[in-house]
Length: 484
Image (cartoon, rainbow, N blue to C red):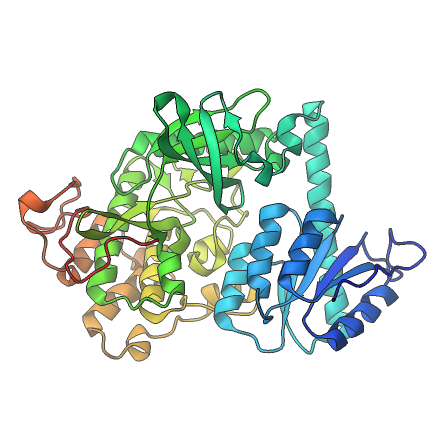
């Protein structure tokens, strides 16, 4: 069965080696491995639960009081990265430490994206493993203390602070928005399908702030700012914000247009083969959206494949919508600096520019670096920098040169590879200086623009007389028109 009884020392509140409070769930499909690690953890004074697969582990996370999940990566039915994702959908504050006897670069990067505290290679030295467990439990303690501090500042526990994320499905928010199925979860909130019932069941998407952070004043300010910033830009390549609500006894939420399709990240994970004209078409639309954001003094700072949504119009594929401006920076707002202090790393590691990885201030060129990373990954199936853990990725971003795109894909035009290389230069001044300039450099590889009667929308960003990113209509008889 793999659901072993809990074992602990006489004082489970503290490990014998001076460790933190620790109720640990260990997940591995090997009985022998589970027994070995259980003995190791129990001898250090931790309370241990076991699961033999991701499904059992998911059930325990939903019912048990836990402080840490330790899981093997490669398991049948559900791998450790998928388990990590599900754990954080249930409890965003629960640390997950992953182990792998056969480290896979793609799974390592996905683990970093989904918030694994560490990714260790088996066999792991005892001291190193114990140190990793202590660090993870310290993270748990800090998160719980922060949550308690927020509750104390509010002076009361409200429905928002205790509402389970999954329990929202079917709820009616602000008296008019019916919550549907969960679509995904991120650092600040979860996104659901929704309908506006007072407007004939109009389909919408609802981004709901996580209950555990919903009373933090700075978090609420950032969440409200995301709605106002995106709503004010009003660009065809940026998801439309329709409403923002902060009810008294309900979680704050943003109402957005509901999109049909899939993210660029989903397309890459499905091993879709992108041609140069495919990704150039996508990139110029991304750059058009960024140009509008930068023109409004907004830096995205967390551009990654999962935040580039590919939707479709009739007979048109890969229409870009930029998502998730939750860590965006307003370049001309003094109060925004209080939310995003220099020295604090903001964004997803694999797509951070070097200055972001050092905790320095980001500007528009930091977003352009990320666009180069998107192009690189779409053409190679991997980010420019991959490593087994967060710190190693950050080190590579600052110290290493990315692999040569033309060596990984010798079939590509060397001039195109040079454009991508320039976008990922470590020095800010060596990169493209604006989204417009970057788009102009990509223009020769964008397929023929359609006749004017075939255009569904135009942008004011003109690259040349025949290509106007983000032309959201391009005939694609040989390309998919919907991504599900």
